[in-house]
Length: 116
Image (cartoon, rainbow, N blue to C red; front, side):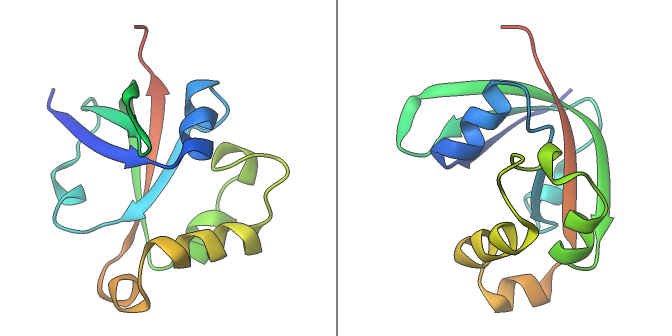
């Protein structure tokens, strides 16, 4: 079981913390290629490095596009019930450049909160 570290903005961090967000979408870049089911991820809140939560990877699913990934799940499992697919795609576009998105496949990381 390998430990990984990733940063999250406050809102998605809170969704994972309260247990509603169980799918994290990322690029399937070099860093994510080392992820395996059973590994742990320490998510740290981007603006508060003392605020973190640990999760276990329970699934990994690759997609060609973020649109395809989002369409494959209930959006409440990725964000919250107030977020639309359009909102989520816009948020992703603010995180990853078009070049990055064109270069890599997309990864849905299915997670389970660890008891801390």
